[in-house]
Amino acid sequence: MFGQLFLSCCFVAITGLALQELYDSQWRSPIEPHSSVTPAPLVMKGGDPYIRALMRTISASESNDPRPYSLLYGGEHISDFSQHPDVCIPIVSGPNWGDCTTAAGRYQFLTTTWFDKAAQYHPESSTPAFWRGSYSFAPEHQDEVVYAWLSDPQAWGVDLAQLLQQGQVIEVLQILSPVWTSLSYGIEPNVMTDQLPQIYEQMLQEELGKPSLF
Image (tube, rainbow, N blue to C red; front, side, top):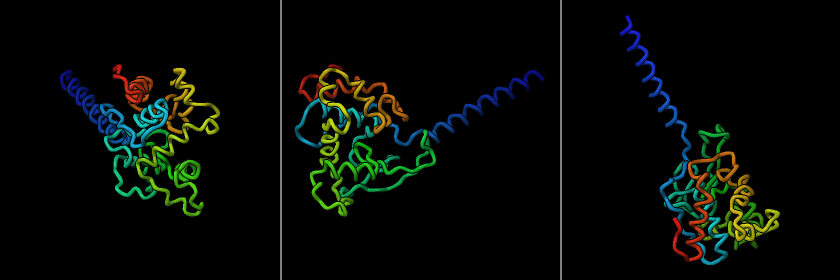
């Protein structure tokens, strides 16, 4: 009798573990970044190395993939960069579960955010508003829009480059976390979030042309 009870308890425990593993694999975030991938260099040439390092740090948690510029939420890739893909993909985990997202590209731009920021910062921003959906989503344009946005003190109420030069990287990540929610104090942290200050320092050394400290 005791042996049967012991075997039954073992069966329940093993079954429970198997079900938990199945649950975890089913609901694990499809945008969990590759923690072993070093953030790719920017396509854009030139600019402030502190802002460039910040851009690479953002992508470390938002799109750390060997091909970040073409990445869609969920892991698929686009081949047409003529405009933002505007594909709404169901969210299967996290606080926004049940909704869908149009996040795309290296900086996981939502369609509405891309339209808004492209109208302000895109090299083609002189295009009439009714053509704004045709703004090129090419890798260099993704970089250029984000670089101009991060470099605009009026957009953030503070000069981010100056804060970075003062070593205030954690404060900067906190400022940006309502926009990129995987950053410090964002609502969707992932395996890279806690590593971002160290990743920033590594990216900064690369952008300054110095040997990596890590």
